Length: 323
Image (cartoon, rainbow, N blue to C red; front, side):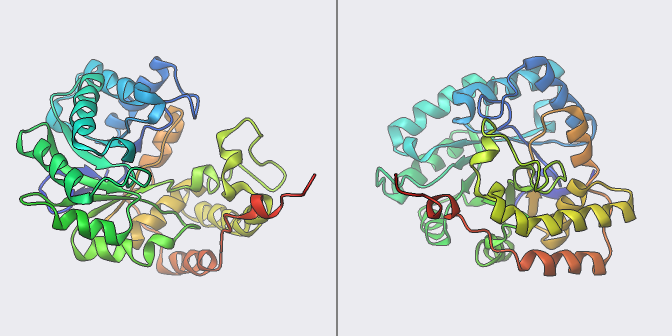
């Protein structure tokens, strides 16, 4: 396993993390023993960076992850856990109560990285107020580092300027081979200020794994089916890239998912993908996306193909027909 430093700190994190959204009702992995086996195998493979959130299963994901880490017996300083507080909770009173509850559910003495999950769009909490409240948690030792998830640059700047003695060490961004909008502003900003980028949805919710085809898209009862990525017109644009990932993978003895993750790792030194695994085989595949590099010609080919993809998120609305 390869390792990076977290942001500007000396904290050592694996170059691939494990997202834990799948330990929830949304994705259906609610069987504790199976989830524990995934966490255990990830640790065996050198993955020490785990990401969850308060809203994933309304605490279920945090509970499963924390319980698994305790039962496996890993030393606290050998694992890095990030969790996220939703924008709805970003007033000081809710921040302190919800973080206290999060620590209780996780069963941890402190949170390594606490991220604001999204801006408080519906409540208009001033940025400086929740920034200072979150920083207090760092000062009293319940949180080590702060981060922001799904924040635009303007709010990142406002948040950082509101801090007195801490800084943002993590930006969590949707980023994958076919959704590359983060490259316009956010990733260059993170590189300039030495901020780690947690790339969520790094395999486009499974679209880049080769599991799905034009004839075999997610069923209506699958949470993926509601993502515009899997709209037939969008997926038709993505499919040539999936085929190329398979072709390149055969050259290196790798699977499409490993090539897709390797491309992200090669593309920026600050990017740490956090895919979610629903079985041991998947976490093994994720781990094997590190410690090798495709050649420049293959990287460039994927760069050119993916740069032509324009995912349109309004397709479902545009297809609405009047009764």
